[in-house]
Image (cartoon, rainbow, N blue to C red; front, top):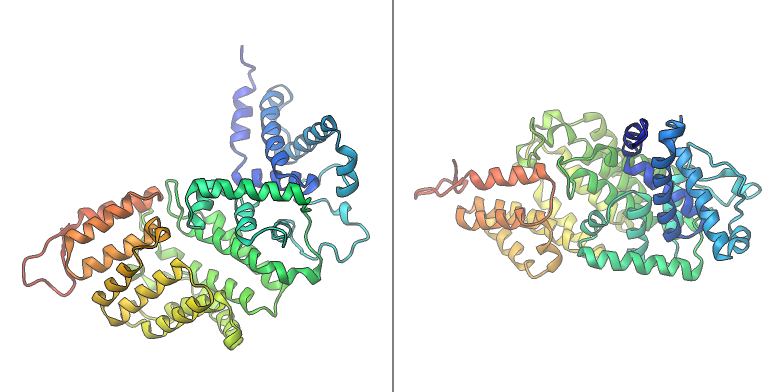
Length: 441
């Protein structure tokens, strides 16, 4: 017979969100330097909770209880493997040490090492730790998003525009390299932050992007992710105030977040930029973002990718509507961005900007020139851009095909609903067609 407290224990475990799970895993990984062990022991700790909590009751601090359980199970495992002494010597772990409940790290591990952990936030410190130069940039970004930021593997694959099997292989390869080289999960010394900050910036940017428009699920926006990304971007800017790109990253996120009140309708479906009520934009965030974007632009030719993206966001923020947006300036900025970061998403953004500047026919020509890129063919916004452009040209049949291509790709249910409505609303017009193309049913 099931224990009377079993259902309460199941509810308590289910209430522990992905963020908390990521913190537990990150803590164990930092203590033992082994992601595989951390994964296994975190799962074991949750299983132990389901066995123990029905009898003992739900602890006052479930996350701290789980951290302690995972740590003890990991200690038992390395004892059995006969490598405990080596790990204790390298990682300074003591079985009796109680984890600090509210933090990811253990401050006692760094007593007497004033410069060893200059990052004022444990989670950000772990992001820096994972950006170890022994790992390839694409590998440590994937690992950080998966294990420290709490994203699922398909979400990480979507963020990095690669197939899920490729991402799975990349994560396995990176974990093997960590074990082989003994890469420590410790924040670097202050003098080493500069060589790792680009990887941390990319993680924060991609974390925000997943929250901004979810790659799966039933809602379009995950506000916990966007809020956490902005928090981390603020900490990065405080940590490296002289960096144009840390200022640019924060500016970009704030200017994008300022649109949040107008980005979804009453049903939670996304609202295109052209249809957003700009009066709803958060003017406080806009003002702060514009100040930071201007500061980042002061770097001139040395401005990096985030400073340029912040400049693009600033042009949008300063425009009264889509028609009066300075698309010529945006196209130039995308050209500069492509020189520094020649990726498929940047090429897509430049194609859209040039289409707005020179007309939908030019936009379609440039979009079609990108259609051989397999990454963009898996990228829903590419097909949406083609659908909108074809609709503006009056080609309802081709626009419908592009909307269908978008719907065939993974995405959140709110966006699915929006695309289905756009597809259903297409109706061929009778010549002469209006300038806007096909009519809406």
